[in-house]
Image 1 (tube, protein in one colour):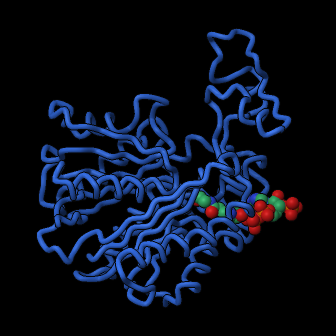
Image 2 (image 1 turned 180 degrees about the vertical axis):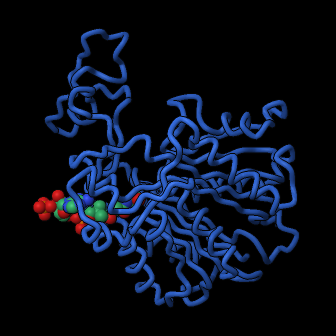
Amino acid sequence: MIRSKIAGIGYYVPERVVKNEELTQLMDTTDEWIQERTGIQERHYGRKHEETTTTMAAVATRIACERAGISPEDIDFIIFATLSPDYYFPGCGVLVQRELGIAHKEVGALDVRNQCSGFVYALSIADQFVRTGTYKNILVIGSEMHSMGLDFSTRGRNVTVIFGDGAGAAIVQPSSDPARGILSTKLHADGTFAEKLSFINPGCHGGYHAKKQGEEADFGYPPVNTYGEIFFTPKMMQEGQYYPNMEGQFVFKMAVQKFPEVIHEALEAAGLQASDIDMLIPHQANLRISQFVQKRLGLRDDQVWNNIQRLGNTTAASVPIALCEAWEAGKIKDGDLVCLAAFGSGFTWASALMRW
Ligand code: UT7
């Protein structure tokens, strides 16, 4: 059986470092609160109007290609995970294809909208395509430009302090060694709590879901001009109803339950145990969540990669960036058992187990 492997990985974070202190000038928050509740000390923000989710992804891709020993021209399929796309449509898959100068190759480009678990979902899709012999050099991306869409007033502080910008990219190829590569992937979702961590406007919901759940939510529908305001009503604009929203504690409780569950599931499918893991790369949602998962799995500090302190939560980019950092630091060696796991908005959660 053909297995797929990550043949090259790269990441990019923008130059500008934003420390907690800088956020305290904009909203009612403190460095102590942010560090104590999340572990975050700083994050990076891209250069507005110069860098985008797509351009960051292209930088990460070129590094990944070089490490995989291929040129962007050799990419035969693109899977792009993001919740902060350059455009509402088309997606970033086609934009990064153009940015890389390979649009003339006309290779397929797929966008994945699975938020924090987006990269693991995307990797799983790539794995299926490689194992069936369909493609040989799949570009898998997780990239986010959060800083363009956050509420920097006190109203948005519970969300805004957490997120940072960055991109990670991997080239997925067939593995020549049947013992090495992706061993198992597990994907899950539960839409019951879709709005607990969401960014619902712009959208064409027209208040439907809120009404169906018996909630009193006034988005200002119907709009004054039906044709011109399908996505934004004047009320949304006036009240700033176009920012991400999160019920933090609810999400936290689900995350600490689902992370260990989905990791055990991937281990079981591969006939392995938590004690076999050499390196766990958890989605960087909150340092307290990662520490909880580490404890539950009985892993040592040096078996879990955490970078949320320096980068914040970069959603779809967080797993590939952390994986790349751990590999660059020499903490992932040939033959190591690496586990990727993520949980986030949807809710969606996923894991991938690979023999490096
Ligand atoms: O990546 C996708 C998945 N996301 C997650 O897994 C996130 C999971 N949730 C979390 O990480 C945490 O719930 C947060 C970090 C978001 C929040 O931490 P918390 O300990 O759950 O705080 P909280 O939301 O319960 O808020 C506690 C208090 C509130 O004040 P009162 O009502 O107790 O007076 C908030 O208004 O902290 C207040 N607060 C803040 N204070 C200072 C909320 N945000 C801030 C802030 N600075 N930035």
